[in-house]
Image (cartoon, rainbow, N blue to C red; front, side, top):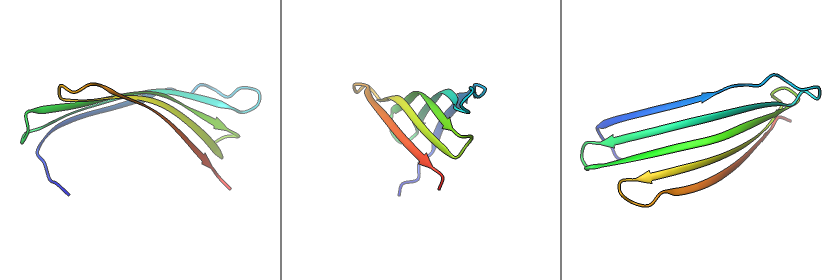
Length: 88
């Protein structure tokens, strides 16, 4: 574990589109994370774009997100994340 001082900005915004006839709802979202650590002269940023798919209310959810991470002057790393949540 490390303890660092510095600054961080995090924002996450989404909008839940009303349900369709089969009760499926879509929630697109965007997220942004930017951090600066005092001990090192480097910044890191992360941009995410995704969507939640809610089936039968909130009993099950499928999430797709593409994220783009940049650390200092290094190349940007892209990742696709898929998550599933099922309420039994």
